Length: 297
Image 1 (cartoon, rainbow, N blue to C red):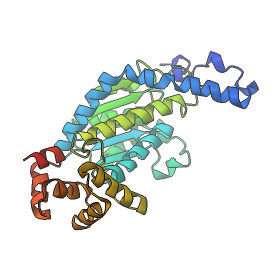
Image 2 (cartoon, rainbow, N blue to C red):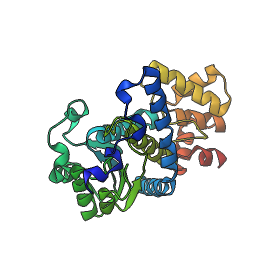
Image 3 (cartoon, one colour):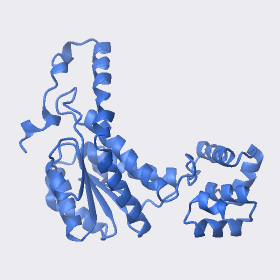
Image 4 (tube, rainbow, N blue to C red):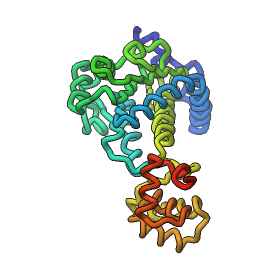
């Protein structure tokens, strides 16, 4: 697809005089344009749901979720992967973000990296990609060679492939078993896909990771019960989560958390069942980490 045919590269007729607008006018038009993003995503919810199901199945088979992108798309994938660790208490190896050009590309553009099909394949090869893994290629334009190279390699070894593009009939969709395409319209600033396209990608990534973690027992009700208390704020949040889940006092939550070695989920099961730590751990293991099942036995 030619660049001038991509909606993400077209000029927005409502912002042709962006440089002559007042600050408030500029912000108002940006806000109006941003409202279009959730509506564009709504149209793709069935496709997003398919990918979530595949990710859950992958996790249950010992597989991983791997995001792969360049520039803003890559940075958003790396961000979502990194945030899964403290939020859901998972290993950093379970959700992995790859960006063209490596870690330094998070802050400095690496010239030519996104144009390399070979680099996309190499980065996955270096991760020892397996058929149990899910690879999600992310590209606002829908045509980034680095992402295409990764998807081609993933397909060649039998991994599950999905993609996120902000143009319809995107090129990367042809290399993806489960393509997700959203059309948010032209950007406020022509071609600046860190705006609406970036917002759309972030929202979709939120859905993929959060819904998948719910699907493997990382959530009880709407509480993040596998949160890692890596700082004082999260320690206090852990206690509040226990209090919300069990209706216990602050002191009881604090004591249970200590007895559970700061494992929020375990503390909740101990309080809800009255079981000792070892028995509560056995319940959780038998229920594959789902609190509802562990406390209803």
